[in-house]
Length: 350
Image 1 (cartoon, helix red, strand yellow):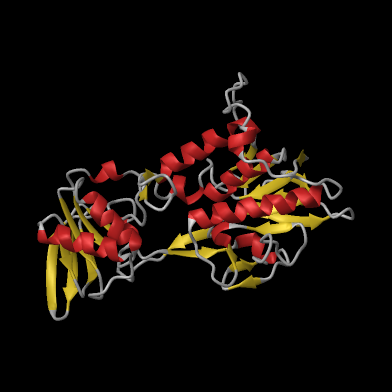
Image 2 (tube, one colour; image 1 turned 60 degrees about the vertical axis):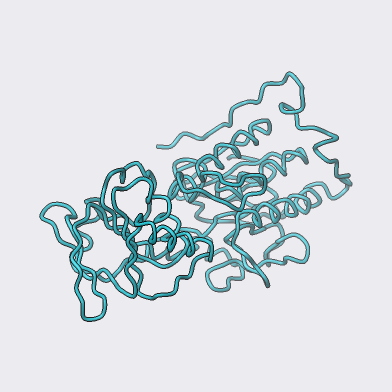
């Protein structure tokens, strides 16, 4: 039985930052994540993708953000159960919880913080014959290492932020980038749309709209695609086809925990502490919903901060915590003390 003060389900950026805020309150944290390493989607799906809306970072790669968060929480010695999915939760007579993973690992804590991001997810795939045959043979639904595409011909399909951002990024990596979207209008940020149009005018991105990739061809791997634009068929010789149509998120077993769910997200009280309908269980980050919710990493950081204050009062109802600014109180290990920041304890994966 692993015992801790706050059990965090999800080791993405919001879950990791929770460790820091809890540590300032001298609360210990343990994190569960189905992925084999901390970082959530930032580490698994797009570690090399730049993020632009993290305060004090004009631009930071998703993987570097995770590395910085891991460094920031080292003084608080978090522990991890990785490569296992939180499966069941049982409320005890004293109000604490036991969470068991799919591999039978049990965790005991008075507070559970669900920071599972979008939950488990599957990429949305275009309806193209023989698409499955080319998966991992030139067809990918996410970009982990952009160096794979250096000096390659790439077709990206989609109209959201991911399609726009990766088209912009790969314009300086690939030998040729073509962006295909079924509409003339895009769903992404306006500055990204303007940047794509600017790169198109410079001849660094081929933009085909309104159009769709209709066929893929190649004997053993992707050698080309057929793009349909109205009555016109455009044959493109390419090395990679990357449809970026987003992900279909699912809460997984958490959906069966008796929590109030709305549109595949957990409803919380945002007037105070982001607690769910079950006292002692909180939901923070992209996994939750409330009026005015924005699915941004920086919003998850804010929610984690307020949640930890509430968790402290739940764990220590007879104590009153007086907040001290880190500029005054410092952080052991980073405030000039000689204590060396310890390494995080990670549970071995079978």
